[in-house]
Image (cartoon, rainbow over all chains, first blue to last red; front, top):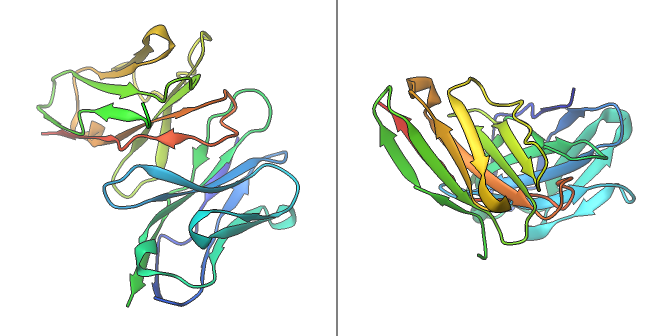
Length: 114
Length: 115
């Protein structure tokens, strides 16, 4: 069965610092991988997704993620964090082929210090 | 509409009462999903509708939970005889294709509080 692990429940960074949020997945084949962001009181917004091809994926708001098959990871990165990036971030995995329900990780809450 | 619309945004109900939560997906989206987000938890899959196919109900936690989707559009999630552990944010999402490969568009959710 598919599963997603986000090892860091809460991360705090200073504004302008770089960021990496970790995501590990379990799936027997090449998965679809997603990162979503949830700002307080908001729904989830898609940041980026990976299906195939280039393992470095660019998303919105300056985020990128790298798919590493050997490590079963899909870590989210941003070179310079802005205060407005404070939110909760969810990694999700979906099965390729057929219909597809996404399995989400427990989320990482990001706090940004000025 | 332009986005996924959920109503009500907040619902407080007494233990034992039934509640109905509504989701209006993006027009033309064939797939509709319900998830539950409990405090400090990730998103828990509840149910999935795709076109006219039988829904995937594998995530419904008990027979108190049911959902329907009328005319391939609006969906209603019903919780009967609510319990305090049902308190959570219920999120609806829709996607253009049944594989979810294009990503979901989520609504803002319904925050359910059972007192």
